[in-house]
Length: 68
Image 1 (cartoon, rainbow, N blue to C red):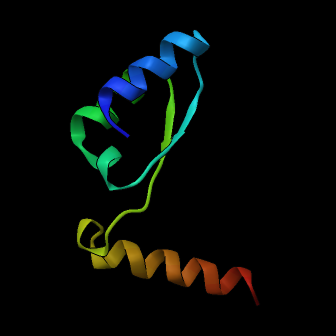
Image 2 (image 1 turned 180 degrees about the horizontal axis):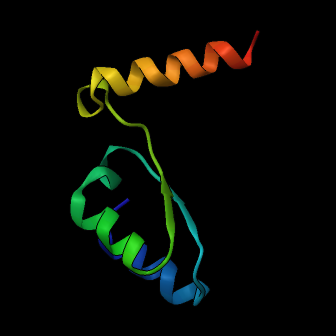
């Protein structure tokens, strides 16, 4: 999702708290910063290369504990 598309959605909805679901293009820092600045939210897949191994291990452990 590109910055112009985000601006277009924002102008149509004219509200805060919008959840943007995007692909790797929303990962750009300028897109995420703009969404956060407008009090909106985003959901996107994050490549494993962007997440430190200890964070992945922690979430994996927590997930396993919840299923037991």
